[in-house]
Image (cartoon, rainbow, N blue to C red; front, side):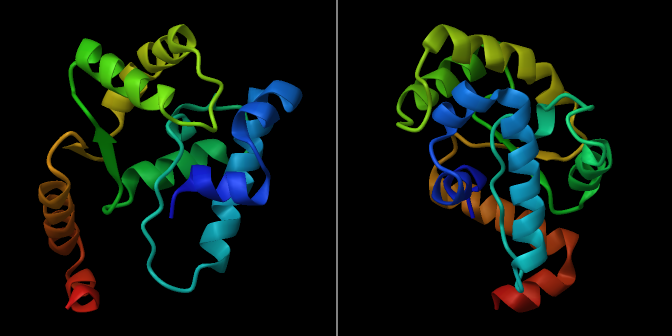
Length: 158
């Protein structure tokens, strides 16, 4: 599941929401949506978080810091970045963001956001994968990783 798509289908346009209610309100709503999804999903699910989810201000919600640590320390949490080098990462992500119709496409603002978030991404203690790898290779690598982390996961896949 993609948290951005869930937000769009349940709340509406992300850019419009941020423009009218502010980024903190968006972050709080996104956190509530995340928790709602987790409480209603009955099966194992892969949930792709919004690009800024792990970099919200720590005071955005009283439970955010605990949730952040929970996600970061979950043995199956992974971080996908197109590059572990700042400049290449910025170039690739900004290019991708400019193709997303649900964002207020401003390349300068997107570049600034990635530059601000990159150190936080790189300090996360979860396993990292390069998302620029061929898709089948990336899926195989992440699946192999998941099986190594949780032997029960292997039974679900087979």
